[in-house]
Image (cartoon, rainbow, N blue to C red; front, side, top):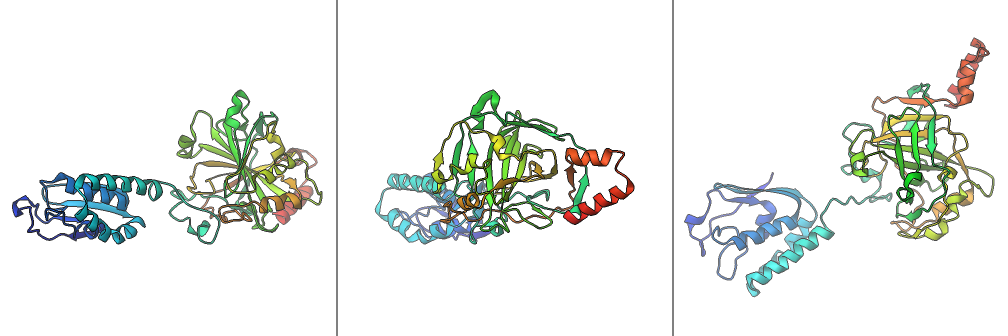
Length: 411
């Protein structure tokens, strides 16, 4: 905590009215320490003049996002968490001196009240600015992501970190129901929402080792500027060109409550693999609308959307681990399910994603690099074919070795 001492004042206030060892926060001292009102009094020194203290306290609030003010008979202290606003406010000090000389106190209080409100709206608050450019990309997210438990996402999936686990299959309920959605260019991704308005037909996931039912809130996509990168999760350090995230909220919780719990969210990740087919019909349920949301902030609201088109035909095999959201504030509240089978997209559909205009004028890439596992293990639930192969009597030692060799080679 930084303090700056303010010396005695010989103006209108007598020494008897001053607390001993009077101190204030360094920015308040810089900004208010040299001020004199029309009567010659000092804003910090006149304990008999509450408006003076109010003015400096108001400016203190303008100068800091989070502050704690402690008053005592011995000292007046301000504990600061400094933001950039302080720098500009200090530059405005001479201007305020002029205002104090020219205008009556009541008008100044109104002006400062407005400035405090202006600063809170445009400079303060808890808004976290982030993106994928060099200036605000993932390398600059430190401090914007909540990394308390070391379970950040995405991750790289390697054979040495995978445990073969006989989980039950995952059930996708109401995923074939047609309904209206809102497709939105958020400036950092394509976000599809509106499922909460479907009532009893809101899509749900359950089973597959999940301990709760989870309702679909939205889904969005991540992609790269070429086919060799794009997916957030990787398999043996290799990327798919894109990845889709279906974000589900635990039943009975609000989104805010879910983000505060280690199992509050269930995100199903779907890899997108490029096909030579010029039209990947399954993904066209979404890609046909991308032309309507070319620019940041654009919306389109089609009806009859079926979320099942965002899933592969085979959802039996998947990876499971505990992680986080992959964008700030990166809450560590996600049970991840990554489907092993990708869905097919054409090069034209991938290019349609890359052609979208985002906050940095284009949205050619929007993926976060992989994060360390920090001792976590990844569960793998095999498909029906894998289970039948392993459990059948035909699975001899020789065929078993062959299977393990193929598994090791692929992963």
